[in-house]
Length: 210
Image 1 (cartoon, rainbow, N blue to C red):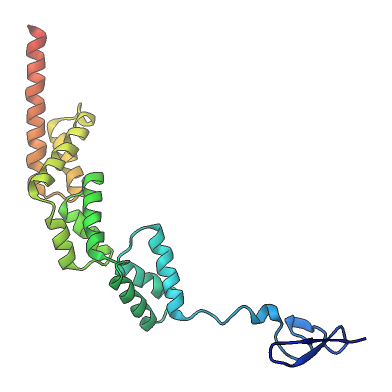
Image 2 (image 1 turned 60 degrees about the horizontal axis):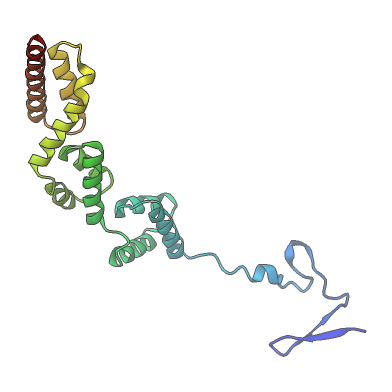
């Protein structure tokens, strides 16, 4: 005996009969998609894809607008959709290049001892606008920069002992130059450190003789 099942549209479909069997590819013999495929929904829109990509990247670490735009471009997100999503993220504060630049300067200066010139170069590679970069590195005053340079030289000074003065000078000044310090500042700081070290050595010799 064939049993009938009532569907929400009021129509009746026979179950248990031979005329309603599944065919290949997840489709039944009537040509309708199977329920499992029908429930999958339509593909995501470019905007939805762009949002998902940006959120995933921002979860890992802060990013600039330019970095996110590059990521969307590499994933073939249409420019119009990318621009819409990026603008919205800026509006709600998920993208903030000014905050990114400020945090970058603070972290890289105190953590790596980088000077303003090196910090500006790094921020440019991340697509931060020049005006934003100038504001961020402007918060790092020259006195703080020089103090950091002195700390870097003091930490490296001992490892250069045994070399002649000129080699020590070049090696220490070169270390500062790679971190973005100007040649004038680097040479002044290194020379002063070597002079102070010489004075300390003379005092130690004097105390030893006494």
